[in-house]
Length: 383
Ligand code: ADP
Ligand code: MG
Image (cartoon, rainbow, N blue to C red):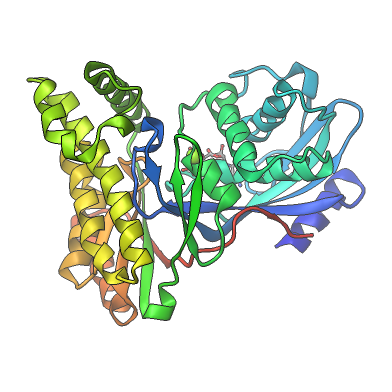
């Protein structure tokens, strides 16, 4: 793919690029809606990547082109970039240039052509892949010397402030910092990280990603409500973030929240989800990989019943997969559509896939896209 992206760059801009970079999408193994509560997450990188061919410019011009979007080259001026002025895809790469310049880095322009195999809007973080690939390219070309976690912070700022989407830090950090064959145990409070070996194939298992291909229209508003509810819970409990509620103090904390049932449910999800992440880490570190299945299932129940962000399509994937012998399954990502993950013995993958497809057809849902995900490398230069 990098060859094709470089060739197209040359056609568009008249000379070959200075380099080509790739940054992956991700799936989150466990740790959902914890990243804006200073908690734990555990994503791994997908083999699907955003690939960008990039050259510097000295004249303050930023030219952007995507192979995956209709329309020609978009030309902007780096000193005229204005947060929330752009409702198109170009806001993601422009936002990164804006965030770098805001942070004092002398980025004086660029020509960028990109193409991505990360499905957009499937909860697999195509947006972070786009941001991170541009950030890494500019970091290398302009010799900024920023580390992966610093690039992730800048990309998050681009998405929060420039694009205007209130996302946490997980997706960008996953895309920037994941390593092949590993899941990334990330503490979103201080961005400390630990690479946890996660090689399912060696143990005769697979992790399926089931993209339901649905995105329910109210998802953004609901995300904001959950975030606000978590902040309210933390304020009522007198802590900086829900991360600070100790696992063995959860019952007492819930009692203190009195009859605010909505906030109680949100708090219960976030605190037990952090605990599930730590549980999965300890199981993987002690070689009990199959034992993470029930923890994933408990995570799904918590998202469905307490956090209330599942939907009929996601529940159907999980219920059908478990009924067909999966070791574990849960929705992944923000909720209200997107993708679910299924942990299964390699020998059961075919039967599970067929059951899920049949169940979707019987329910009258759009056919899901199913693929096996192997933990892939994080962002890197490829040419
Ligand atoms: P997700 O990150 O879960 O895939 P988002 O809504 O956060 O979903 O990001 C999707 C948006 O990212 C798309 O609407 C588009 O603006 C942008 N995007 C993703 N991939 C591409 C691409 N290949 N080319 C241009 N824009 C893209
Ligand atoms: Mg996104």
